[in-house]
Amino acid sequence: MQKLPFHYGWLIVITGILTLFSCLGLARFAFGMLLPNMRDGLGLAYDQMGYLGTGNFVGYLFSVAITPTILKILRPRITISAGLLLVAISLAGMSQSDAFWQLLTLYVLTGVGSGLANISTMVLIAHWFRREKRGLAAGLMVFGNGVGIIFSGLMIPLLNQNYGHNGWRVSWLLLAGITISISILTALLVRNKPESLGLEPIGTKTPFTAAELGSSGTAKSGRVLVSLGLLYLAFGATYMIYGTFVVTSMVEEYGLSEVAAGRFWSWVGFFSLFSGIIFGTLSDKIGRRGGLMVVFGVQTLAYLLAGSGLGTSALLLSVFLYGIAAWAIPAIMTASVGDYLGVSKAAAGFSFVTFFFAAGQTIGPAFAGLMAEHYGSFSPAFLFSALITAVAMLFALSLPQPTEN
Image 1 (cartoon, helix red, strand yellow):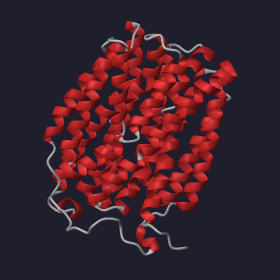
Image 2 (cartoon, one colour; image 1 turned 30 degrees about the vertical axis):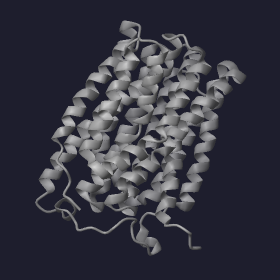
Image 3 (cartoon, helix red, strand yellow; image 1 turned 60 degrees about the vertical axis):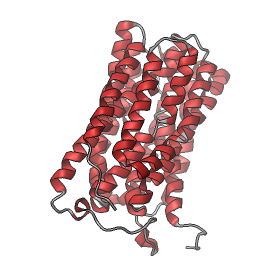
Image 4 (cartoon, helix red, strand yellow; image 1 turned 90 degrees about the vertical axis):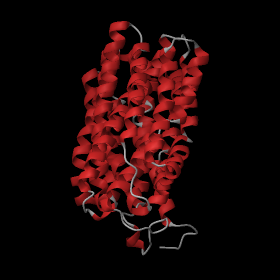
């Protein structure tokens, strides 16, 4: 292979950005933009909209359980490409669906593929980056989520304008085509470990911690992982309530046009471009515990503003706060697992905490949909999200600091 002018680990980051752009930025976060048009075209009820979101996370939850085993057999490179291929096929199928149950089945499969690709990609960070650079690397990778939101926020309203009630079908088909292209690219470029290219991980080599050596820190690390999992559950439930329903709330409760709501959603994507980098790097400096507390505080304010009913100015501030902190928790979690468990146990540890995350995502949209059906508004669900993240901010205080480098 021709020698690159930079460490191959940064190419792994670039492929990670593209992977997350596809499996999360498009396959998941475009869903909120597509919901109003899908609802009009198929006559979906609020609770069915919530069940579709939940179905996706049921599939994601299933993939969390099977990914560690699959990674042992296929390794990250093939697992990522196969996951993206499954996402592409299921999204193409959704574009041709005419019934709720068809959409639900296919979106479950999308969740499975998303989980396979996402978890396998984030596991690569522990192999390619040492502790002092993990927060930055994870923060850069989640850049892809924000790009996906910007793309969907700008492109989908245009397609809906041009294709009317069939706009959502054309959108899903376009997203499928993009995803299959990235699946091929990852198969060509991803490498499982730096050793396969005769390289060392990026960052300064530091002494192993007790957690990395698997010594007496094992039980303590297990307790920390449960705590991280509970925090990840709180994040998963709340950020997807907002991400799934805020566009519908803009259109139906704030009276915004679909194009205007799309622009608001695109601002979420723009602000989120900086979230992983800012807070991932911050957690490298002040510690994972402090970083988590700051992020949950920002999210609490965002949800309070969204549910306050104070008008579009408060909503715009909410969009800014949600966006600037959107991918901070996944970035910090990815770095935290590597800190506490080390490279050898990173895949199992990340899958463990992601199980909580996926459970939160599964519960959140369905519960919010039921609340909206009962109250006729999404404001109560946004306020409930604020309560959850406020509790999570305080709970983060219980986390110990990882052993110093």
